[in-house]
Length: 119
Image (cartoon, rainbow, N blue to C red; front, side, top):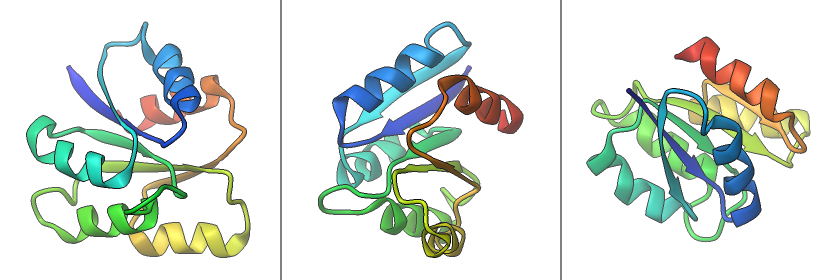
């Protein structure tokens, strides 16, 4: 069963994503910030991370770059999910190594479709 880590400092967003994915065959994990997510990655070994950009401490960009630079975690698929929608934000996500970029507000069905494409 594929493992998905949902990382967002907004509990309502984590709940929305979890609810959208609960009927799928994924094992779901949650983290409220980048530091918590980084600590979880080693133990749960997720196949895919849905990652917010603007979080306290370790930002989504920073976490994404750390994971993509590490040979042990570079193959994890990372979907950036953010309210930041400028071209510069998309570029920064690509530079950090994100596999996909989705802007908030988002359609849970669109997110599910994107996840299923990667999985």
